[in-house]
Image (tube, rainbow, N blue to C red; front, side, top):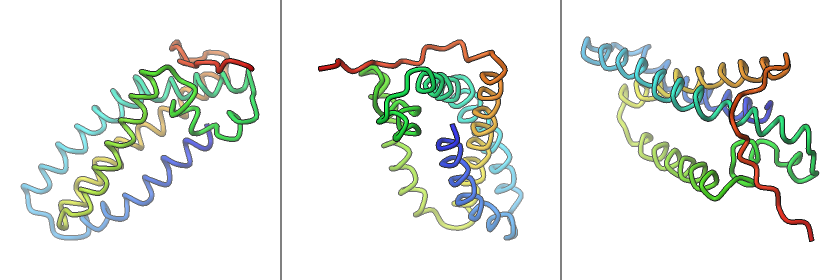
Length: 161
């Protein structure tokens, strides 16, 4: 869990630099309105629907699986395993890898946005990821208190030879 949380916290830190720069500049009323709508939309779409309803409970469920069935490779690559990039069903891996590729493409494209628009976009992403980070902490604490997420970990155990 710590590995995934650190990845998300690092992204929040990096992106918040551009967001703060946008807020330090003089935004027009239109830019403030776009910022408010964008941040709210990202908190809902990315934070609530993406992270809280799907990603976070699965990450915690997969972390619980590793704790109950430790294999050295899964422990070594725990963040990658928990994000379903391997050891998941074909559909699970396809979704995780497609999402990762899509995020990478968006990151590259967003770099070309002029100021303050890049900062405005980053502010929404920071808000969404922050909700996601809090969601992971929430599900982790609940799991530690004996209430694991009610979601399938989607673990495919490799055949032993």
